[in-house]
Image 1 (cartoon, rainbow, N blue to C red):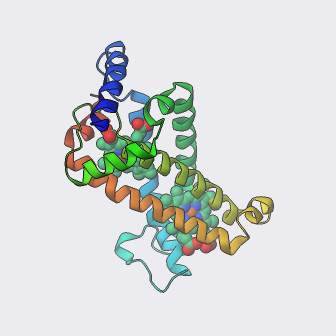
Image 2 (image 1 turned 135 degrees about the horizontal axis):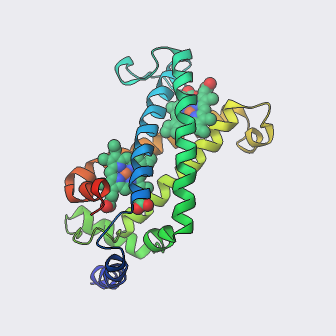
Amino acid sequence: MTIEATQTEANRESASARSSAGGTIHPVWLRVTHWINAVAVVVMIGSGWEIYNASPLFPFSYPKAITIGGWLAGALLWHFAAMWLFVVNGLVYVALGLLTGRFRRKLLPIRPGEVVADMRAALKGQLSHDDLSVYNAVQKLLYLGVILAGVVVVLSGLAIWKPVQLQELTALFGGYEAARYVHFIAMAAIVGFLVIHVIMAFVVPKSLRAMIIGR
Ligand code: HEM
Ligand code: HEM
């Protein structure tokens, strides 16, 4: 009941927002930054795994077939090249998300009760995806969470890239070694998000269509 109530209210708000935007669910700037980000993140993960293989933190390595760069030096070049794409594109996305009010409108508020209710409904296959312009509470939590993981991966990445020049930042993470673990954990969180996210995009193909053509 509560799910229906909150969704109905959100639907009414989004319906008025949609009619003023000519039926567009995702504006162009969001779609462009989203897909640039998808490419950048895949390169960052693939090259990061190759870097990891040169000096593994844990008793496992990544199969060569799923890494990018071929060897350590090649992977570092890929990592630092895609880093610019990831950071500049990410800053544009976050700036526009804040300035246009999209984050406030689409990703907030997140109420714990709604997360639990929507999670239960999702696991029973009863969560509605009729109105793509409204995110359910689980989506909101995951999207805000992955944005946060993006911030952490950048800051910890900077800390291990320039540990001398940025020693205050590195110290904030508890030193170089600790920053490396933080960087790894943030990467793992993004990979975990990506697995669920991509599965859901294909389970609800019209959401994928909207992220490509806007509606
Ligand atoms: C501003 C952005 C970033 C910077 C400056 C950065 C920098 C670095 C540096 C310097 C290393 C080498 C660490 C070492 O020598 O052990 C590294 C490793 C790595 N990075 Fe990044 N990185 C960034 C973003 C990302 C992103 C977005 C991902 C993936 C989502 C990622 C995944 C990895 C992984 C998996 C490793 C190997 C972990 C390890 O063994 O230490 N990085 N990164
Ligand atoms: C190739 C893989 C990807 C596919 C197929 C994909 C697909 C989608 C789709 C279909 C949506 C709209 C979801 C909806 O209507 O509920 C979406 C939104 C979103 N995706 Fe992805 N995505 C991919 C990669 C990524 C990556 C790598 C990230 C971040 C690390 C990401 C972060 C997001 C975020 C934050 C949103 C919400 C954006 C907003 O409304 O402001 N996606 N994605």
